[in-house]
Image 1 (spheres, rainbow, N blue to C red):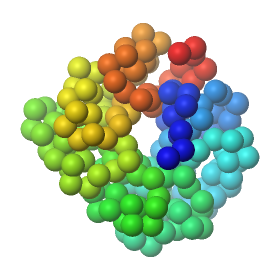
Image 2 (cartoon, helix red, strand yellow):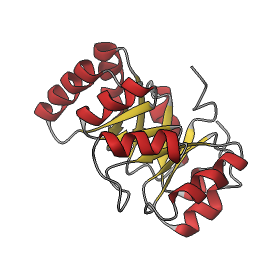
Image 3 (cartoon, rainbow, N blue to C red):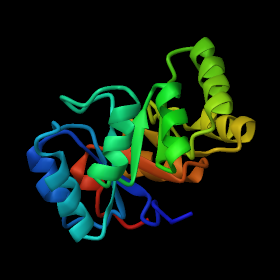
Length: 185
C-alpha cells in the first residue's frame, strides 16, 4: 500500500482559502470536506499536480450521492485516491473497486466506542478516523481490537495535541488548523 501519511499531519479542508493554503504545505495527503460535483474534479487534479493524495468525504460533498454510482464516480471519473465516510455500506463499495476507505468513528460515549469498533471490524476499511482527536488514550484500544491503522481528527488545535496523538498510536492527525500543516514532527 502507498504511504499516504508519510507526513502525518493531514489538512482537513473546509473552504477555498484552506484549499489554496494546503497546496504548498508539507502534507502528503489532504481530506476534502467541502465542494460540489461541479468543482471537485479540478480540485482533485490540482492537488495531484502538487503530488498530494486526495481523500474525499463523500458524505459532505454537495451533489454527490451516497450510493454505488457515487463511489464509482469518485474513483473512475474524479480519480480520488480514497473516500471518507461514516457509512459502512460505502466502505464496502469502495473496497469492492479498490478505492481506499477511511471510516469515521465519532466517540461520544462508551457505547459509541463499542459500536465504532464493531463497525470497523465488520467493514474493514483501510483506515479508521477517530473523532474527536483529543482522546488519544482510546487510539491504542481501537487499533488493538480492529488491527486497522488509526487517524485522529477534530479539535486538534496545538502542536502538543498533534504530537501527543501521534505518540499514542495515531498514524496521522487530520486538522483544519492550518498553523499545524507544516510543523516538524
